Length: 289
Image 1 (cartoon, helix red, strand yellow):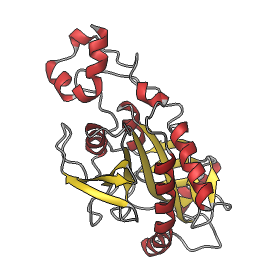
Image 2 (tube, one colour):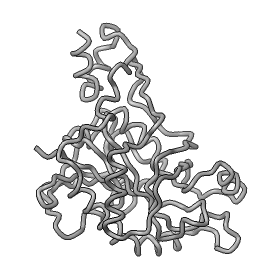
Image 3 (spheres, one colour):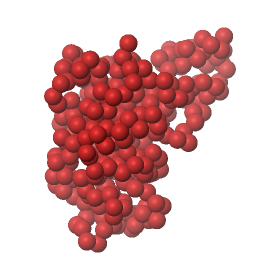
Image 4 (spheres, helix red, strand yellow):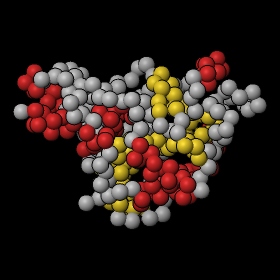
């Protein structure tokens, strides 16, 4: 059995040669509606599930995306790993617009987003020191090399609340922290994927130099869109290659992220919480009995 790979990104990512759409499914979750319906299909025998993060037509700002519902929906249809495709600003001279960064770390500067499934009667402390699944990251890195995409191995993604871009002072401050790219969407998405025991990796597409670079204009939506359109085909080639080369079964450590992480005694978890989180904790509560 080949386990499905989830892709979170722009609504046009599933439009590439070889992908056959089988179903468009709207999923109900205990956390509300996902950003959009899931686009489910096959790529040369590999099951793939796409979810447009901002909804078709880009209806949701980064702060309005229902990250919990999105991750839950993908988990509920059998996805075991997620490739996140994100437009980012470059914070380093060497990362030029049009380059790809296969990041390995995050800094979270979001302030107003629901960032955990575990509340209202059940507590879990999930390890997050290494937020990216290294097995999946290596798969993306290998795909970048195979497709000839200009890329950078490793880097830190700083996630800001948005939807406004950074001030120049903020951008210069973040540069002193040694970050590689700046974006608005990968957190709490990555945290929730780990809580759901899903492998998660990011394909960060640099579109601009934020506003720190004196030799370049400050970031604008027009500039971002122009570069992003040029990068769409490259991103599709990388994703396709990665999916075809990934092992059929995902045995990454993320699949056991909740082992020993649930602190609340099973008999102290309210029935409503058990029902709400059954998809995530059911097997673990069974093991505790």
